[in-house]
Length: 138
Ligand code: IDP
Ligand code: MG
Image (cartoon, rainbow, N blue to C red):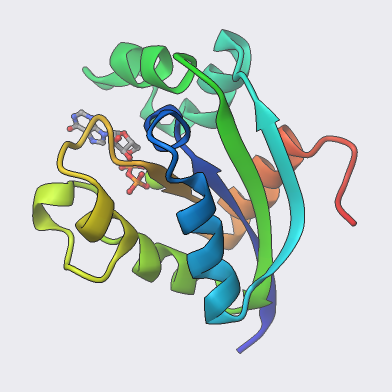
């Protein structure tokens, strides 16, 4: 048990569909605290760095094209066990398998447009927060 920080991205589909407020509200209602929030258009370079673990996979090009297709809302979220709890709240990667009550299970239907990203480990959270909040957090 430890207070952690993690990176959440409301992906371009979420921003486009007007769902970022609902996503923020879910995390705040759960008890998490916002330590950073930034609306930005992700550059191709940032996208490639962010998704470097997927380099070489057949869907990598599609992934980069999608995350750069419109603004994302980047959030730094803090709270008890934030990394794993946020992942649980997100639901399974493929929304067709995401449980109702999860963000993807309630708001998405397709793997490529699954509304949210959340860091998957302590190392990823540290790396991804530094990419999206290079000036640090409050
Ligand atoms: P995650 O977002 O649940 O952590 P990852 O395995 O890290 O899932 O994949 C990153 C993103 O890449 C997913 O959110 C999804 O949008 C997309 N993705 C993952 N696997 C596939 C695939 O097999 N085909 C197409 N897109 C995929
Ligand atoms: Mg991932």
